[in-house]
Each structure stands twice: as structure tokens, then as C-alpha cells.
Amino acid sequence: MNTAELKQFCRAVRRDIINMTANAGSGHPGGSLSAVELMSAIFSRMRVDPKNPKNPDRDRFVLSKGHAAPCYYGVLAELGFFDKAEFENFRQLHSILQGHPDMKKVPGVDASSGSLGQGVSIAVGMALGAKHQGKDVKVYAVLGDGECQEGQAWEAFMAANHYKLDNLTVAIDNNGLQIDGSNDEVMSLGSLGDKLRAFGFHTIELPDGNDLEAVLAALDEPTEPGKPKAILAHTVKGKGVSFMENQVGWHGKAPNAEQRQQALKELEG
Image (cartoon, rainbow, N blue to C red):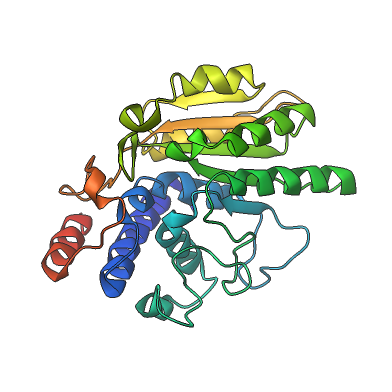
């Protein structure tokens, strides 16, 4: 996809997020909408095949902030990993599309996630495994900023540097809000950029993490041998839907019928 096509792809994923959460009457639209450019850009750079999702030589992706599953499912369905008709069943009993990603049910999902902090550790293990096997496999993980309050995330960062995992890219969806309020109110993270650099990451800070071209450039920027990459993307929670933007209340609340129509109208462009 060229950049113009990828922008349209992002718009489609945003509509998918609204439709899924509205269908279910539950889910996490805010942090799904903020991550659209990060996840869409990553998948545009990954070596994956919807017709052969289990190819052992594929690149790997882990959604460490597993509650942003609507974004993940939107990206996978738009790429053709499964039929968009499945969106009607999001978060329903026995559906493949549960509230958090299940690798045993969803084609294209490489790791089940949802317990915050764990996904990035899984990604580190995948990157280390590829190194041991001598495989040219790239591993990507998307984390939430509130998730970085978990100690396990920092253990994973330390391991990534120790094992020189230059095949690993960690992208942090830094929208500044979490379920109970702003990050600064709940547990201030200080300067995440300084912390990531101190942990040995080749760190790229994006003032606008919803700027698709900037995300693509960050993904394409080479890192020195032995250094894992971190993309610290300052995003907008609820991005693309005016009444959801920067509103903590939309972390885990679905739009009603009227709000759904308003959101979809805005996303028509």
C-alpha cells in the first residue's frame, strides 16, 4: 500500500472499531482509536500472508495492550485474515473475537494478551528465539503508556537490551490517559524517552504519533547493530472521533446508536 491507501486503511479501521464496540455494547474504543496509525503502519511493514498466517518464517506482532483488540481485529480483517462479518460477534460467547486477542481462535494473532505488561515479555521471547534459530524474523509489540507502570515491562526492556535484540521494535501508544484518569494522576511515568534511552533502546520520539508518515519513517529508520528500537508515539485517545478525543471516559465504554452514527459520519471524511 502507498501512503494514501494506508490513510484510507486507517479510516476503515477506525470505522471497524466503532462498529464492533457499538455492536457489542462494550469494549475499549479510546485506546483502540489512538493506536490505529501505529498498528496499521507496523502491519504494512511486516512480512505476513493472510493466506498462510502460520508461516514459521513470518514476522511477529504482539498487542501487549490487549484491550485495544478492536484495532487489532480491524487491521487483520481489512488485510483479509478473516471475514469482516465476524465483527457482528465481537465479545459474544463462543465468538473468535473476544474482548482480548486469543491466538487459538483468531487467524493472524501471534500471542494471547490482556494482562498488562506480559505482552512485551512475550515479544522479547519471540525475538530471542528468532536469534537463536538464526531466522530473519522481525518482532513488533505495541504497549500502552499506562501499561508501562507495570514492573514486568521494564524487566522485558532490560532483557531486550541485554540480549541485543535488534530484531525487536517496541511502540508505545502514549495517549496520556488510562482507565482511572491521566497517567500523571495515577502514577507519573516521568520522561519515558529518557528511560527508554537509559535502557539501551534506539529511541524515536514522535510528537504526533497519529501522523502516519512520521510513524512509517520511524519504522524505517535503521538502528545500530545490537540495539532494540523503541517508538514513543504521543497519540490522542479516541483519535478521529471528536467527542471521544482526550476523554478518559471513553477508555472502556461503547458508543450508543446515536453516537455510533455521529462517529461514522465524522469518519466518512
